[in-house]
Length: 536
Image (cartoon, rainbow, N blue to C red):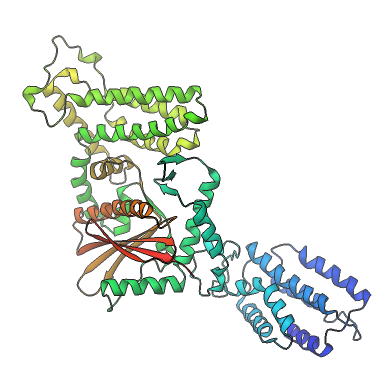
C-alpha cells in the first residue's frame, strides 16, 4: 500500500505525463500476466504484479504516463479484484485487509481531479463490494457474484445489494402467477403443475435473493418496528429471522424434526408417539391416506397427457385406478357411521385363504414405484409411495376384504392399528404422513421458506413460534395461499408442543414477504400474520 500511495502522489506530481513506447509494451505484458494469473494466486504475488503494472522500480525516471493508460491500469486492477472474488479466492490476511482498506480510502480522498475520481469510483466498484466482506472470517471463501442470494451473512452496506434489487423486481414479474407448493411449481391461475427447469431455477434464485434482503439491517429494523407497534413488546423485544440459520428453508417430513426444532426431550417424545399412534393409525385414516397419495399421483399423470403417453404412463394410470377402486370397496362396508346391524353378513362357505390382503395394495405400490422411478416429474409421488411402503410391509398379511363380515372385518382393522402403532417409530415418515392426513386431510410434506424459531418475550414465560413464507406477488390470492400454507405448518408444531406437554404457552406468528411497499397485519384462525414489503 505504501507503493500504491507513492504512485498516487507521483501521478499527481507528474500531471499524467506520457509513457514511452517501450514501457507501454512492457505494461501490456504485465497486464497480461495479471489477467492470466490463476484464481488461487497468492495475494502478495498479485500485489507485486500490480506494483509492476503501476511502474515502480521498472520505469525510467523520465517515463511519461498517459492519462488514459493510467485509468486503464486502475480498471484492470479493480476488475481483476472483482473477478478474483467471484472465483472464491480466500480472503487475504488481516494485515492485507487493512492495506486494501487504506488503498480504498486513498482512492476516495483522491478528489483533486473530479473526472478521474468519477472514473475510479466506477471502475473500482468491485473493490467496494470486496470490502464488504472484510468482517468475515479470513479462512471463509467469499463469492461476490452470488453474495446477494447465496451468502446468508448479514449485509451491512446498502450498496452491496442495491444494484441487485432490479433483478429481484424482474424475477417478481416473471413469477407473478407461480407458486411453490409441496416441492412443485403451480400455476395459480389454472392450478396446474408446471414442469419447467428454467422457472424452477428462477424461483430458487428469487427466494434466495429475498432471504438475503431480509437479513439486511434496513429490513430488520423496519420489521422490528412493526412488531413493537403491533405487539407492544417494548421490553425485551425479540428479532425473528435476524440470524442466517433462521432464514434457511426447512422441509418437515417426520416427527423427529419437529421435536428437534421444539427441543422436545426423549421422555416427551415417547408421550407424543403414545398419543399420536392410536389416532393416526386408524383403519379409515390409513385408507384415506393411501387414496390421497394415489389421487395426487393421478393428477400429475393426467397432466403429462399433453406431452404424449408412453407405455409406462398408460400402465401407471391403470394401476392407480385399480388400486383406488380396491381401497374404495374395502372402505364401503366398514364406514364408522353405519351400525353393526346394517353391515353385510359373511357369505356362507367363504374361502378366507382366497380373500384379498394388504399385500395386494403393496404390490401395486411396488409396480408404480418401478414404472416411474426414473421420471423426474413424478419424483415427489414416487417418494411418497416409497414412504407408504413402510406401513404396508408391516400389515401385508392382514385381510382387507368386506366379504368376511362385520365382526371379522373389525378384528382385521384393529390388527392394522395395533401393528402400525407397534412398528412405526417417532422418526417414521409413514407415521408422519398418516398424522398429516389425520390433522389436515393432506399427505404432502410441510415446506417452510424460512424456518424461524421459538422466541421468548418478557418474563411471563410466553413463547412465540415464528415462521416465514416468501411470495412472488402481493395479490390477495397469493397472500391467501401463503397464509394457509403457513397456518398448516404452525398448527402442526403447536399440536406437537401441546401433545408433548411442553411448559408455557406457545403463540403462533407467521411472516410473509413480497416485493413492494405494502405492510399489513392479518388475522387467520386466531393467529397473527405479518405481510412485509421489500423495497429500497
